[in-house]
Each structure stands twice: as structure tokens, then as C-alpha cells.
Amino acid sequence: MPLLNTAPVGDFSASAASESEYESFENVTATFQWPSPIGLYVPQLPNLCFYGLFGTDNGTTTVTITPQMSLSSGTGGGTTPVPIYLDLAGATVLPLGTPVLLNYYFPAVLIRFNITIAGAAPDCDMQLAIGAYGG
Image (cartoon, rainbow, N blue to C red; front, side):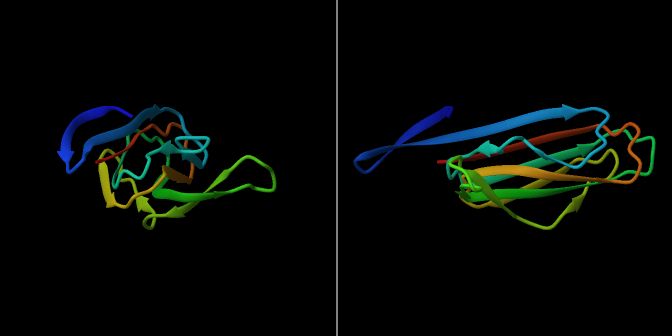
């Protein structure tokens, strides 16, 4: 976790931190979750940011993003923990060529996008970024 700065708080030294991830996608044709496989680990950093930009499209594609967070996990019938994701908000349609920025204040453990693509998607390009900060 990157260290931004420290400040004395009583007998402790508090530090602010941030985590983020960015990816550009080309020719996306199917629904998916990002980042995969489990999401971005944001150890209870309370300020969550989600960014999406739907770039070019040669068809009649509709792209929606749903920000999700996880506080706990189950075993999924095995011994490996499987995050249990909940929607932070309803689906947001990404308008063509217009960036969308969503902000939430919630101390999550993992965050991700659920991306849904409907319609013909012959050339669907998008940029996604997520992050968290606080301290």
C-alpha cells in the first residue's frame, strides 16, 4: 500500500493510503467483471472511486457498469475463500464518448465493476479505472 504521508494522532502515527487500477479494453463483446478474478483489494479505505469511458462502437451496443464491493467471503464449497459481492448502486449506462465518475464513501475490502454489454458489439472499446483512498 503506497504511503502518502504520516501525521501524529495521540500515541500513534496515522498514514493515508491509496490503491488503484486502470485498464483499456478493445473489441469487448461479452459481460465480465473487472478487475478479475477477485477484484481490487482496498483494505477498508473509505473513499471509493469508479471511472468508465465507453469509446468507439460500430453497432447498437449498450454498456452498463455496476460498482460492487465485498465485505466478506464464503468458501464456495471448498477451502478457498470466495468474495461475496454486493452492488453499491444500480447499473449506470455508459454514454458513448462521455466519461462517468462515481464516488462512494464505504469501508470495503474488495471492489470491482460488473460490466454488462447488450446488443451487437462488433468493435466495443472502453476504459475503466477504480481506486480507493483514505487514512
